[in-house]
Length: 318
Image (cartoon, rainbow, N blue to C red; front, side, top):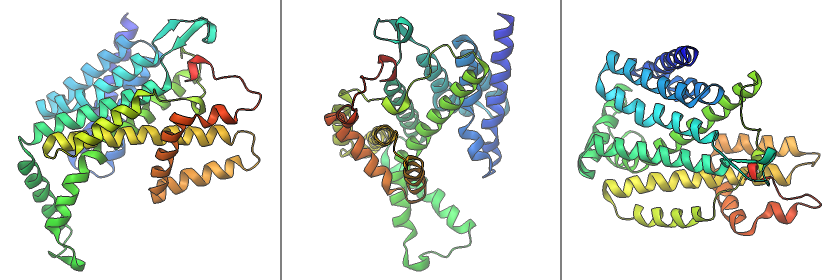
C-alpha cells in the first residue's frame, strides 16, 4: 500500500509539472501539457487504479497551490479525471469463454468512445465556464484573436482578410478543434502507458489487435443526434459540434483500422500505411475519407467480408 501511495504521489507531481508549463505561456510547453495524463495512466495501468486516482488528486492539488483553483478544475476535468477513467476502463473484464483466457476485456472501441465522451464533456464545461452565452463567448474569442494579431504586428485587414470575420470563424471551430486535440492526446497517452506497462511486464490484459477494433452500432445514431443538436446554435450547439467532431474522429480511427486490416500480408503494406498516415497528418483531408470508410465499414463490415480463411476476431479485440 505504501508503494502504491508513493507511485501515486510521484506520478501526480510529474503530471502537474507537465501541465504547469502552459501557465508560463511557453509555446514549447503545449506538447508537454497534452502529455500530462501519461504519468497518471501509467500509474493506473501498470500498478493500480487507486494509484491513478491518487496521482490525479496530487496533480490537481499541486496546480491549485501553484496557480489557483481554476487550474484545479481544468486539470481534474480535462486531464486527470479522463486519465483515471480510461486507465480504469482499460482493465475492466468479465468472464466469457469466447475471450482470451476466459475473459473479455473492455473493448478498444469502447475506450475510443470513452475518450470522445471525456473530451466533449471537458470542452462543454470549459465553454459554459468561459461565458454565459454565445455572444459573450464570441466577444472573448474575438478579443483574444485581435490581441494575437496586434502582437504579431499585423495590420487590420491584412491580405484582404477581415480579422473580425476570421475571429468569428475561429469561435465556431475552436470547440471542435479543442475536443479533437483532447481526444487524440488521451488516446495517445493511453497507448503509450499500455506500451510501457507491457514492456515492464505489468500489463494485466492481453494486447488487443488494434486493427480489429469496432465501434458499437449505436455510435451512428449518437452521431446523427449530435449533428442535429449542433444546428441549434448558441453554446449548446457548439458543445454538440464538439461531440460530432470527436465521433467523426472515432470513425476515422475505425477507417485506419480497416486499412491496417485489409492490407495485412500485402507486399506494399508498409508503403501504403506510411503514405496514408503522413498525408493525413500533413494535408488533413484524408481524415475525412477515413471517417467515411469507418462509418461505411460499421454497416458493411469490410474486414469480415475480406477475411479469407480467417476466423472472427477474438472478443477481446472488438
